[in-house]
Image 1: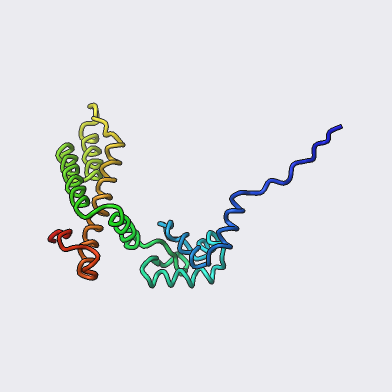
Image 2 (image 1 turned 90 degrees about the vertical axis):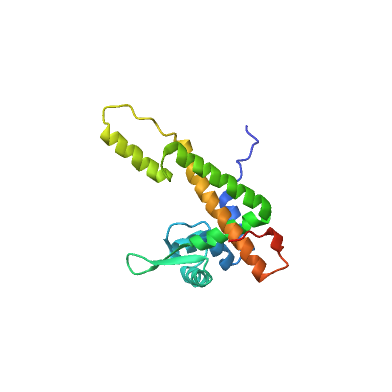
Length: 196
C-alpha cells in the first residue's frame, strides 16, 4: 500500500508573477511598462491584454503618453489608432542613461574613438555605411557572376551598425548634457561642455 499523497496542483509561476505585478502597480504604470518595449505599432486592445487592464483604460493612458511624447500614434488599416514607443523618447532615455554613467570628458573621448573606428570601416571597405557595402557587394557579384566573391563577415556588419547606433546615442547624450547647462547651470560646469 502506498502512503504517498498525490502532489498538490502545480501553480503557474508566470501567472503568479503577473498577479503580483497587477496588485503592486497601477494600470498607468503597467501600460507604460508594456509600451516602453513596444517598437511596432499595436492596438490599445493588445496593450490592454499585456497590461492586464481594459482597452478603454489602455486607450486613455496611451493617449496621455502620446501627449507627453512617450508614445507615437499611427492610423490602423480600419481607422483605429495604433501605438508604439516613440523613437524620440527612446533616444532621450538612452542619452540620459549614458549621462548618468559616463562623465562628459569620458563621453567626448569615447565619441572620438567611435568616429575613428567608423572611419576605419569606411576606409577598409571603401563605402560610407554597411548598407552601401551590401549593395556594392551585390553589384560586384552580379557583374562578376563566375568569379569568387570575398565573404563579408556578418559579425563585422553587426559591429559596424552597432557602432553607428552607439555613436548616435553618445552624440545625443553630449548634446543633452551641453543643453542642460543652460537650463540648470549648477548641474554641469561650463568646463564640461564642448563647443557646438
